[in-house]
Length: 592
Image (cartoon, rainbow, N blue to C red; front, side, top):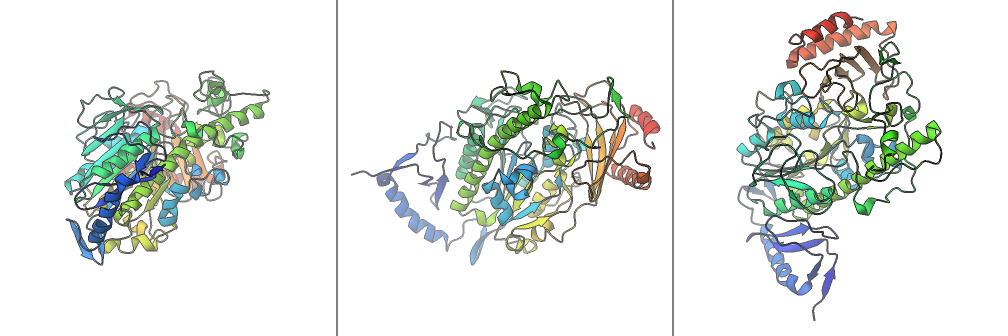
């Protein structure tokens, strides 16, 4: 008699002559292709598994007393270099992760992502240097500001000859792989294996471009993988882990498309949150004294006329207008009446539910990865990071999208679970002493590459402008970060009508200069916009509701922050002298 087992989460199979590995599978396996393997089904026979299960008993016992090649034995297996898994989503605001305890945490939970906060460190002060997909991804890989690595806008390709964290780790003996969203136009370099989406990719039945196939830049190329993109990316990633060389450390980057717009949830999540009212930010309806003053006039409109809105404040890119279109991916916005606040609320609710439904799949798949690492005894010596390339405006100040220097846009969620076992004395006890702790210090996305190299025992190249924060993984509450961060958005008025600007964020204040020029930024709109300033007291006004710049009472603070901003620009080599048009604007507006 044959006993049939259904909906098995783990399938046990031999992966080498040294050990038995558990392959984490979905409860329902779709048609996703696996590298060189037959498609898996959710029905297995106990009879077929019995020899493997029996062998596993002896192999696992042997593994407990005999270290694999490249490891040292000291009571427990301790790898010389930690494995690294970086899971990065796209446009995932910290507000939409329940361990960050933001306004959405009462109705939306991310239990799997939260496992990293429980077992590791939550960073509240990780920021993007340029809050838009392509430039932020380039900064993370290269450890350089946008003006240095040459990727200032969405239209800029990453130079394949540039050094990056993957090249450095591979030279140090790591296996390197990246799966999912790449969005840097040119062929990935530094990775032993890649399978990446063309440009943004699709939510359903996505195309991916795999190593070994003829590369075509940008949106071209790729082979269709049936299924939902978040599941597909995880399937491919786990299969790569299953086939890797077990005698070498690895770095795997799992880059999800979600929750980038326009949002298309998995079919299993289409009704998720259907009967839930999503909490709304007060500033969705009342913007207070946020943003430019009424002295800034463009096209006859004064004040708050920039930035894509949830409401119809910006008619062309307003979500209300866009969602009324019958072709909106999740169906058109349905309205009972056209009262302003009623319409804004309906658009916000639809926006957030579409957005959060895509994150639901991300969280599930983070769980699959964590379960795989745990089931395969990799959790002990693997650094695990969850982050996003930047944040996202979720209705705050009546904005959606990112790009702005505002907190919700530039803050990156950053959760790190350090390896539990370390052979490097400088990392000893990291996994235990920092468990469940929080860092409120300031760090930049350009600091990630130097930190990963530091953890791997690799010296940071001089060309990298970031600095390692490895110490913060061990002592997050006492390790100092940066005194201030520099931010610059180059893609003037393109797509979401946001003027080019740069600024400084200290631990207590933020100053931004909206110079409003395209300069040499690829894809920027040519027409200049009126220059203006914004200043916020983050200690007393963390939601940035009052622009203090017009007040004479802030003159001393403005002078201090301008001096600090100028010094920081000089230190990192982003000076304005190369742009005569910008110098002319500064001559008129810097001291106003």
